[in-house]
Image (cartoon, rainbow, N blue to C red; front, side, top):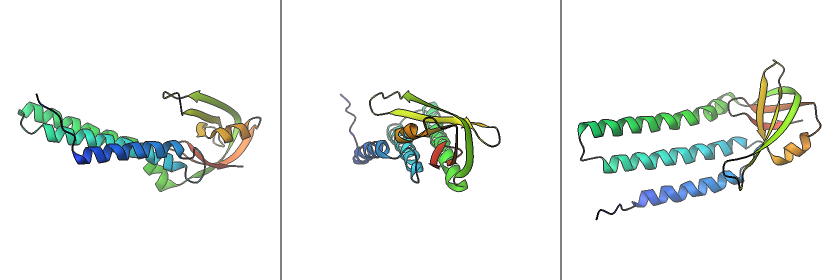
Length: 166
């Protein structure tokens, strides 16, 4: 019987992933540190991709050329996936938050796929250039914005996260 033994680094990365998930649940949905929530999501994705890649490399040494080619393609796809998820945060870090006026406001809320911890709140409206925006906000902000028709705000364009509004 071939037992698959967990390596120490796999356990460490798994625990780190759980810590980052819990930290992400506590991160603010709006405010100065709003990108920290997005970074937690990216870290979880990167750790997952690292774990899968390490397993592929560790268990793929004694295989045919076709098997090695397939494993190589999977590793490249995992790298591309990791970079794809990180691109929006990287662009927002480089460009910084933008200021705009949002009018014709609507608020909405949805239950996330996890169901227990994640209720998502959104504000939607039209910015000064006529573009329709849908931005994630906190539950507190959702209550405060109820009844407003127009707000001034700072937000990150690529991740659609609000820094502040007034």
